[in-house]
Length: 398
Image 1 (cartoon, rainbow, N blue to C red):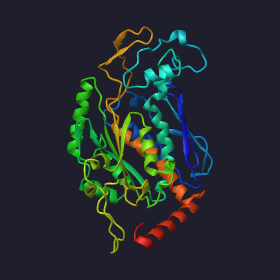
Image 2 (tube, rainbow, N blue to C red; image 1 turned 90 degrees about the horizontal axis):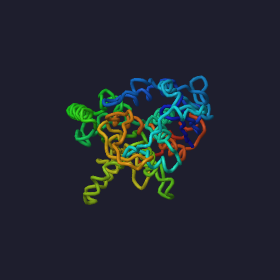
Image 3 (cartoon, helix red, strand yellow; image 1 turned 90 degrees about the vertical axis):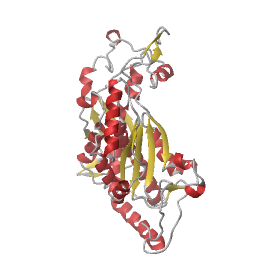
Image 4 (cartoon, rainbow, N blue to C red; image 1 turned 45 degrees about the vertical axis):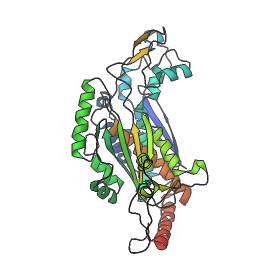
């Protein structure tokens, strides 16, 4: 099974990740990883850090001649900003006498709790590890799982449906047309927008809202829509809590910094309706085989994939670092003060969609491996094709 770990601080020398369990034989190019890192850096409302960094991954192991070899893949992403932080972030030289301690926690961040939990006398270590800069390593790790899935006909994509007060309809004809072509087509289309929206009126409203928030010293959050296409019926299981596909996907999304809400399909809207208007009716027979005319369940029933596109929605809170400070206190004196400002974005919702794609990829890949098994691409592909053929023969679906 695929698992990964990340290491590194926002202003340290580098971020790194080790991905274990990627099957052998997955075709990989440097572009498969670096294009995803570049996507993560885009988006209207990003801060100055994105002008400093040009993220590229150095692959140190696990790939030979353009294919995975079944051993752990180790990657490093250098922080160009490290050259400006060698004194305050020195690893072995004690520069504490030259560096001012940060003792004013920012509301909404990990600052206060991390400071107390780990016994620090300076918030800087909390700031640097809890930073969303860490997601660059997760995007690199997830890009391997995305490549693996894509080569098996399973695609992952996202778009932004709202930023602050600016939003677009939950479903429209254009979205369905894009999904029919695959989730990667959806992602490519959303990437054409500075805010990764599909609706041009909503895009302009979002840009105006970001400009206003930035002028006011404020920040904005929003909602990201993630779709996974090509997943056959039967991934995941209802028999144990830790094998439920929906819970694993929700956990992956909730692990992203500033994500505070997750739903499968239109779950919150469904909660306000009677069951007769919620559940997706089944139709069998005819040339289309087993079909549904709606997908309110978001492609998952009984914690298992049901053959429809998997639809996930993630709500991102506004970033907690504000130019216009909120009230806080000084940990050294307990005196009331204004919170401090740490360089950040006015809005990072477009980037959150790219991160969301990356973190759900290993979850789907592991559900596939649990169902199909196999250690190399040829073996896995043949088993998956046989399973799809069985579904086609029995129910007219793939």
